[in-house]
Amino acid sequence: MPQIHNRIALFRAERGMSRRALAEAVGVNPQTIGYLERGDYSPSLELGMKLAAVFDAPVELLFSFTPFESVASALRRAAE
Amino acid sequence: MSRFNQRLFSRLDAAADRTGIPALARAEVRRRHLRWIPILALALALGGWAWGLAQPGGTYPGYALISAGFVLGTFLPIFGPIKPWGGPRLVDEFDRQVRQRAFLAGFATVSFATFLGIWLMLGLTLLDHWSREVLIAQLANFTYMLFVLYLTVPTLHASWATRPVEEE
Image 1 (cartoon, each protein chain N blue to C red):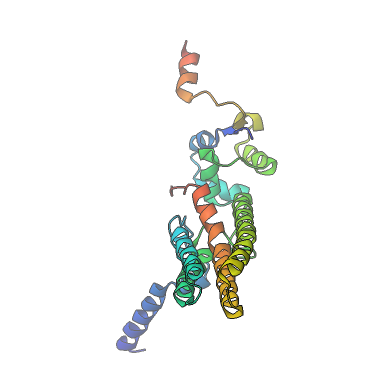
Image 2 (cartoon, rainbow over the protein chains, first blue to last red):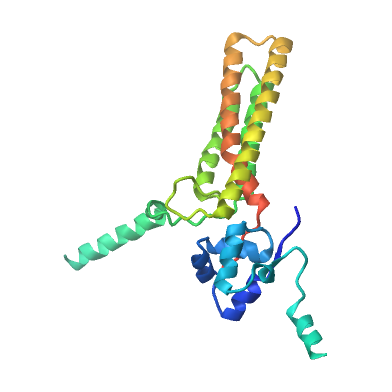
């Protein structure tokens, strides 16, 4: 099964949201958010869409089959 | 209420809290990854069963070892990472997946051990000419050991399959 990469930690940090607050918003335990962020768990479609809805972002911006570009390299590329 | 009674009751409350039973009743038990206790319980149970097979005349020490494994095993579903069915705590999709995989591993282990154990005991009965009493004692030991497997393997699987998430 291919690993699903995600940007949950990045989106959460950007919004200053705690794991607990995000977990309550999507109806899971805070530990589950931790497992998701660490990439140890691939969410169901339902949970993925709930997370995308909380961050008001399309699902493909939050999840990907390929690793996301790091923020530092994206900034570097934007500055060029 | 006098100050003496107040102090006495608060001390009694604190003592009761330290036992962990009030937290159990409030379902506030902190579940954690138990990686080594199931291994110890399994080692005791398997060791006890092996002892019983090696000493068919005196199975009591083996039975005592399996009992020690059983006692350890009974605490695993309470404090281990697998959340029970129908508990008051939120069981989300991750918890359900962990539980499903852990019990699958547990049932597979018990099935395989049963198959292996029955043929092993049948073979030993024929080779060693076990009496009816010895065979009954061996079957009792074996069933007891299978129950310890059922108690410990799911927790063992769940504890090693995932790494704990640190608190924020």
